Image 1 (spheres, rainbow, N blue to C red):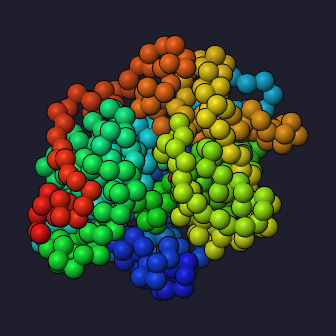
Image 2 (tube, helix red, strand yellow; image 1 turned 180 degrees about the vertical axis):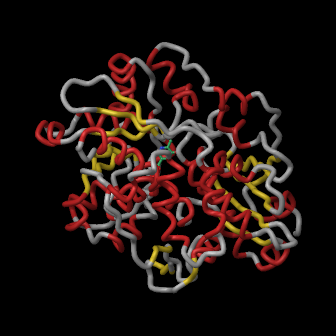
Length: 433
Ligand SMILES: *Cc1c(COP(=O)(O)O)cnc(C)c1O
């Protein structure tokens, strides 16, 4: 399989697309064509790694990683991804629990897969690859966990001091020596600007081999399609119904993977995007004008995106707003609605949801009756509520018990370096200035 940039560059191999992250012309990589499957093609595949193997095999044809695919998938899916039935009147309702990985958020899947691929592509290089990640919370932890203690790979995590929760900060700072955690005296935007500046700096780029691991890498998207495939197949086999999905959405990476799975023939019904108060996608569907803007801070902070980069992929794959809005729903959910949803989830479902997941439960409760009753629904749970305990616990008035994977991480010693938000401080911290 070959890969092309959304802006035309290419073709490149999968291996090159994984290593580059972004195309030379600034576009995002997409496979030349998507394979098409029938539900029956997966008849004897009933675990996630087995479904993943079948689904992803065509994307690896001709890649140096082809023979390692099974191993890569076993490494990636080392934790369960259950779809749990929820109590609801009427049509079936399930929660796809994507938060049982090492850092308790869905980004563990994409980061784990990317790390498993890159470490194999890197094995014959002698200077380490340095992955730079600017993070407002979840991404940095998932990437650090995925690359932790991998030989030949180094991760530099930049996060804004004082603007991530204590638990998130700990998750960014508790890894082996190959993960350097930098507390930046500035905002998330400063962290992102620093990563860009470092990669563009000739002296630093000569001293390090830089790469990035943000959600525009095709290696983050491919494995995400597999949990949509597996959960929809499981439901379809059991009931004969194609479930709809409601997906908490920020940069559109997770939802894009679901749409890609549907395009490949998986038994998926309607797909509805639940965003927070950042209305860029909702306004696009309404006005047909694509107007990216600065992001607003909300309770669902990992979805605070005003310019969702994967929209470029979606427009290329499916079409512009007039086509997109026929195939996708979107609802923008306010902070007040998120709070209400967390409270309601706790009383109706008997467990807490994180603020991101709550955008999906709110959206489900506010579907048109006709739409709601025409389909079974799978709500996508993107993070464990214990990661956002300072928001969730006051709302439900209870302590959220720590899942074992988070408890394990929080018990580790943490270490970090504090830097000013300038390139010189970054260079001093990572060496090679
Ligand atoms: C990153 C993230 C999202 C948003 O996912 P996108 O792929 O950026 O749309 C939602 N919820 C949580 C918990 C996240 O970490």
